[in-house]
Amino acid sequence: MTISQKLTGFKAFLTECRRVLKVTKKPNKDEFRTIVKVSGLGILAIGLIGFILQMIRNYLVLRK
Image (cartoon, rainbow, N blue to C red; front, side):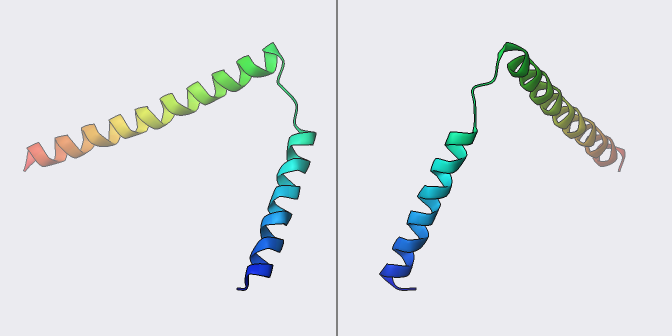
């Protein structure tokens, strides 16, 4: 890949970043609360799954 091709790719990336930033908007209070709730539930679910798997693993290892 030549320097010219890399510069063209970088310029395209910057253009795409600018386009995305123009389209996005700051969330209002309700949207922000919903995002926080969904993210929190996802984190709790993943943690719970990990905890359950760890408990099963510990139970199987101690059982031997």
